[in-house]
Image (cartoon, rainbow over all chains, first blue to last red; front, side):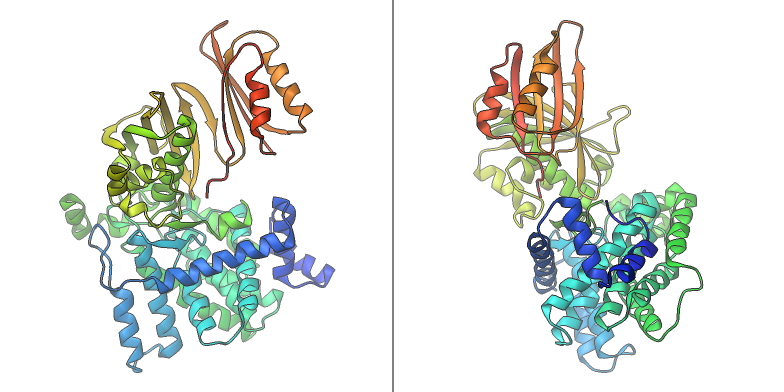
Length: 287
Length: 221
């Protein structure tokens, strides 16, 4: 049985003297009746697929609708100029988020994390960090366990689909997962990890799912950028010793409440928000 | 949800429900047909009809019918590959009362002349629900090993089937029983925790009153 609260997870870490990723790995072994090596290998395959999804990006193609394409390449070129406001590392994070989101829209292979619409957030923070050789591959796999474990609790207490909880459930959840993963990679302890996740989720609370023409393109691709950057700032806050005044599990419960109260037109139906603007309607009619 | 439902699946975009789920539906329909399909008529309902094109739902369904899984890079090319493999297909829009928004009705004809009608829905995160097979309710997910047994509606058949499963140490996870009318045809849909070997399937086929046994081993991508 998967964990039902972040508190339960961190308590078990303290009780057994094990790191968070190991507790989550052991839970997966139990849940799927799998050997440790099988679980680890499966996570390695996810990581390889994530790396490939970034590497296989093509900057010169557009999605079938023509709404997205080429933004990742533009951001990469701009960042390489060395004069971006966000600096070198964050520019790479932004470019990677755009690349993965655009690859998804162009029917390329990605890793849903937790969903296809939010597939750019985790690779956006992990791939540039890994490529700058700040850690080895095993450490990244451990961080993926941390991310997945946080996502599992969010899925249990709230939701991870835009159709049920709005974009906060997709990009918000992905951002919380990424914040936890990065906090772990930077040496944060269990408390800092779940605090980072809570702050990331809290910062995106209320985000609606309003895709133009119902496609996972506008505004979805760019929201992967905000999910990734928000994950970095939340991780840095937690590492600085700044904590959420509201306990992490209560933040997740609040996300659920907000999602339940959210009007249906703002939950992937393409009837509200950005999807209902005159420009979006014009585009939809022309399709 | 399992850990790899959260981190995963590895899939071709853009949508877990409209693309990955659609591939799985096509794939399972092919498995249920039991041979290579030569023609497929697909009717899209709800959101599948409204936004399916932009999500590649059409190409994803055909890819599945060609035996591809959700992570197959050839999915965007499935229409061309269908031509190469002599699979004729057509799409239309339908309204199926009460059906899930992401639903498709597929009519298949196989190379051996067998015909099959499957109604299935993509229920989110790439997970699917097979609603009907040849007009009979089945409601199974395709995630676990699944047995679909067509049989005559007569006493003792359910007991005979489950006894044979237990003799082979196969645990029943879920079981549903449907029939068209009393004493007519009935269907058992059984999801099991363990896979079932071929020789044990023929063991089930040999039960008197069993008309047909269809099996798929679940976990497609």
